[in-house]
Length: 509
Image 1 (tube, rainbow, N blue to C red):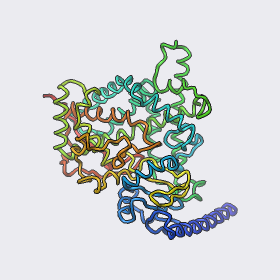
Image 2: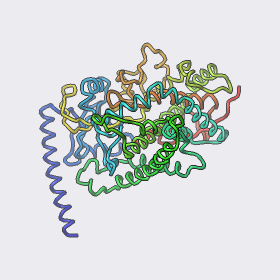
Image 3: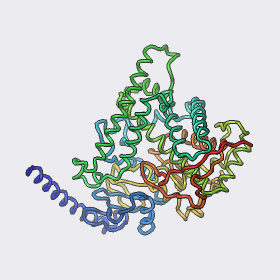
Image 4: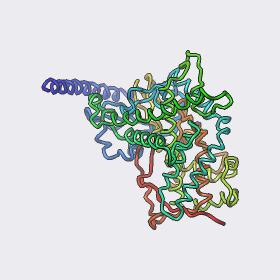
C-alpha cells in the first residue's frame, strides 16, 4: 500500500511539473501572438473553474466568452488545449482551407474500450479505412436510390408511431417518446429488416436499454479527459460504465448478425434480404484502402453507431420542433393549415408531397438553427499544426465548432433568438443545411459532415408533418404557451431540460 501511495505522489508531482511547463509554453505562445486569444488560464486547471456551472449549457458560456475574446478563441480545459470557432467566417476558413488537417477526432475516455474505434464513422481518425466506410455509407446507405427503395419502411414506421399517439389520445403523454421509438424502429428496419422494439422482443428491449445507457454515461463530463494522470484510475467510473453497456449492446448486435448469417446460408440469392446488414456482409474491398471484408467487430460498431447517432438526434430535433410550435401558436396554426390544405383529411402525409409543404420544411430548418442536435458538432482535432485566420493551431488541439452560436449570430440573423420559420421561406435567399452556407451548419461541413443528412431531410418533415396533420395538441398540466419551460440540458445531444408533455387530440374536419 505504501508503495502505491508513493507511486501516486510521484505521478502527481511529475504531472504538476509537466502542467507548469505546459502553462509556460502556452503563455509564451500567447505572448508571441500565435495562439488565438482567450481568457487567462489558471495553473494546472486552466479555464475549468471559470467555466464552472456551465456544464448544462456550455455552448451558451462559450458564446459569451467568444463575444469578449473573438470568434476563434483558445480555452485550456485542464491539460487539453481547445480552440472554439464561433462565427461563419471562422467556420468557412476551417472547412474550406483546413478541412483535411482538422479532420481528426478527439476521442474521449468514455469511448476508449477493447474494440477501440475500429469501424467507427464518428470517432475513427481520418484515414483509408474511414474513407472506405464513408464511401460505403454515401453510396449504399444514404444515396437517393437506396433511400427511395426504403420509402415504404419509413411510411410503416410513421404509421406505427401515429397508432401509438392515437392510443394515447386524450391523455398527457411524453411527446419525445413517440419520436424515439419511431426512430429506433426505423433504424432497426434499415439495418435488420425488423422492428427492434415491440412487445415480444426481449432482445430488442435489451439493445434499447444498453444503447440508452451508453449515451447517458458517455454524455457525462469526465475529469479523466482533462487530467491525464486520472485516466488509469477512471475516478468517476465513466469509462467502465460506458464500456460495460457498449459490450452488452455489441453482444445483442452479434446475435442479430449470427442469426442473419445463418439465414443467408439457407436462402437462395433471390430470397436474401437487401438491407444495410446485407450490404455490410456482402462488402468486398481491394484490401488497399480499407479492409477486404468487414469483421464482425466493424459491423457491430457500424450497427451501434447507426442506432445511437440516428435515434437521439432525430428525437431531439422533433421534440424541439413540437415545443417551439406549441410555444408559438401562430406558427403551429400556420403549419397545420398548410398540411390540412395540401393533405386531405384521413390521408397520410407522404414523402412525395413534402415539396408542396414549404412552411413545414421551414419549421424544421428554423428548429435546427435554434437547436442544433450537436451544438459543438462532433469535436475535431488538429492532425498537424496549421494557421487559422492567422492564428497558430498546434497539433492535437481539440476544435469545437459552436454551431449553436453561429446559428444565433445577430450579425447574420435578424431577431436571432426568435422562432421565425418565415426566414427560410424564400429559396433564393435562405441558406440550406448542406454544409455550404456556414451561418447554418447543424449537420456540419466538409469531410466529417454527417453522412445521414439525406435520410434526416426525409424523416424529420415526414414525422413532424404526420403528427401535426393527424392530431391537434394541447399542453399538459394547464400550462400556457408563454409559460413553457424552454431551457436546455446537455447530453449527447441538446435536449429539453423538461421533457415536452402534451395531449394529442385526433383531428377531424
